[in-house]
Image 1: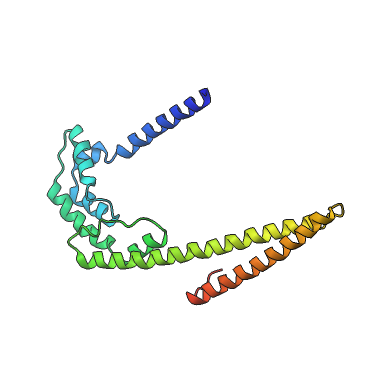
Image 2 (image 1 turned 135 degrees about the horizontal axis):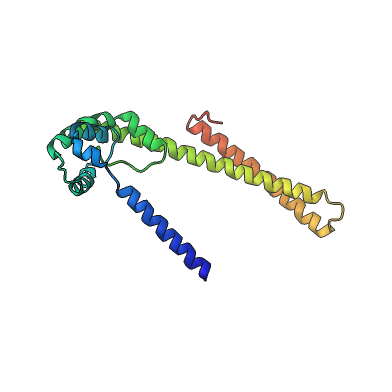
Length: 196
């Protein structure tokens, strides 16, 4: 019981440290310098949330500095046009990341449509790769199970009824493996995949 309490406290302290680190959004020096055009542009190019400015306002007010919201948001929108592209959407989708809604909220509707199309195409590839990986994992698991059965059958001290049961299992595993390999080949042909 004491271990679980200690673990819970450590997780709680670790979470608090993470929370403190994640709240640190901008340095005092950056707040005082007030280069909001540069900060907004960089945040837009990185696809950060427009709501990031609220963090800056809070943090900079603690340092006695003000955020030039208009300059930040204008530059943010400019930077966002470089983020909201087909390629960035595709990369995000292909990695299996969630859809980044920042593009949908911008005035750049063409960029938003490109980003969405890229994301959808990339996510389709991600799903195909996931399905392909499941086939490979299932094949590897069946092969390992088959090797185990073969090794057990090679034991000279095996009982006759166990040997008979293992022979049936071996045949079933070979059939399943053959079916799975056929399914994988059909899957690759259907989607014209050349991965290995």
